[in-house]
Length: 367
Image (cartoon, rainbow, N blue to C red):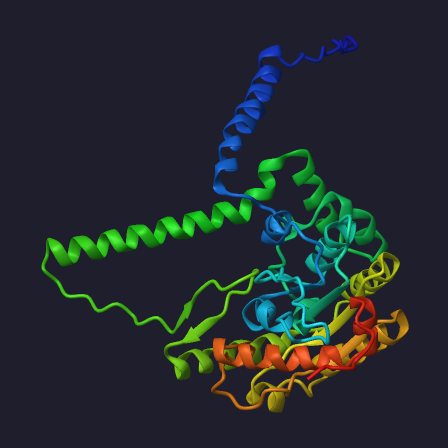
């Protein structure tokens, strides 16, 4: 006769995590947070347009907002030069365009910056680039958007990752400096490369022929930074390939179009007239890209927005003509930008809504 087996179950006690582990995690986060403060020396993550706005002391007649096309292509001195209007007075004009910016950046700067001035600009020239409304764009510098933009972004259906990036930057400021750090690392790599060249030429007596620059940028006035083309063909051909590739993948973004509507409505409330300007591009661009679905669709939508919201739309993509006056298919060279800025000034003086906004409703005496 076998004896019944007896199974004793001893309750297991959960072993509490040592207090040292919790302290270690806290110390790790604290150390990371302190070390990350060094990133503050990498530069200012805000758009350069904000720094420029602080330097403008007088109320503006015309504010130019856009990306690199407007940055190099619209000369304030030509748009607001003396003699443009019957009174013979020059206008206060500033070019706030920022390279690489898109419609969301423009909405942020106009709504949170320009229109909140004590005296908002009388006219905003919004030099829109269709690629600034591209849903497929992946380099739109979210760190340059502000917490104050969150209601607009939420209303317009911005993706969750965009909202989280802005909130993370709000809670942890060094997070906004990622692009600055990456740029500084690239510059450091360039310096190290030049050090290698120096050692090879001086120590090993090797020869080195530097690549000739294709363009030369130089500052002018009031935010306008034009360039002269030094080697035209190579730069233009590279631009053709780049634009062709971008247009192949481009698709219109509804949230960017809604941001444009927000700009027009905000400006109307502030008493500012908006001129949406489709900038001139080279003949190759006009013949090969502006008639495609993406570009043509953008143009139709912007025309509708302007009509519905009381703005002015100027379609000037073919206003210049030719290829040689452009550094690449989308950017005017210095000489071309000077001539076009004068042409645009003449067009603006003929638009009644612009004249009214500037307080120059009479056309008498104008040349």
